[in-house]
Length: 178
Image 1 (tube, rainbow, N blue to C red):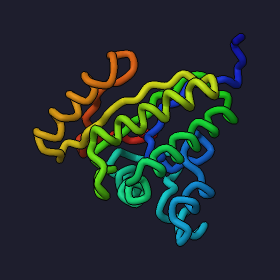
Image 2 (cartoon, helix red, strand yellow; image 1 turned 90 degrees about the vertical axis):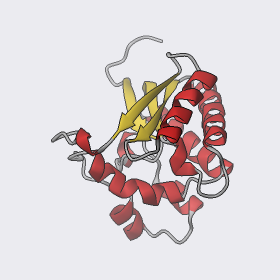
Image 3 (cartoon, helix red, strand yellow; image 1 turned 135 degrees about the vertical axis):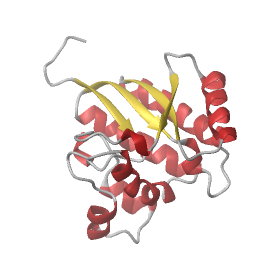
Image 4 (cartoon, rainbow, N blue to C red; image 1 turned 120 degrees about the vertical axis):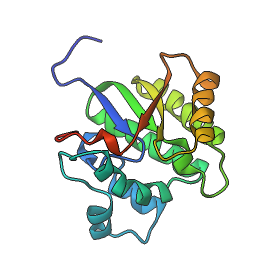
C-alpha cells in the first residue's frame, strides 16, 4: 500500500479515551451494550475533552465504560467497532491498551479477557488489513499479584512485538496528555 497523507497510526484504550472521532467506541455500540444509555448519558459519562489533562481524568470515565465490557460478546463488539472506525479513518497501525482486570467483574478471568481481545484483534486486523498490537496495562493501585500476573500474560500471549506491559498511576499527571 502506498503512503497517503491521510493514513495514520493510532494509540487507543479499549475502554475508549472519550474521542469517538479518533477511533474509540461509538454511541451506537454503547446503546447496543446497554440500551438504557441515552445520548446525554453518553456525552456526560463517556466523552472527555479533546485534551485530557492526565490519566486520572481518563480513569474518571473508564469505570463506566468498563461496566459495559464484562462478557466475551461485549469485548468482541467493542474491538470490532474500534477497528471499523480505524478503517474509516485510514489507520494503518494501532496500539490498543487493555487493562484486563477492569473486565473481570462478571466471571471472566484476566486470562480470558486477553484471549478474547487477542483473538478479536487478530481477526479484525486480518479482515480489515490494519496492523495492531495490544499493550496490557495495570494501574499502580493493583496488587503485586495482579501486576505479576499481567506480565505473565504478556509472556504467555505474545512476543514483545505483539504484547507489552505498561503501568499507569496518578504520578502520570502531565498537562496536555491526550
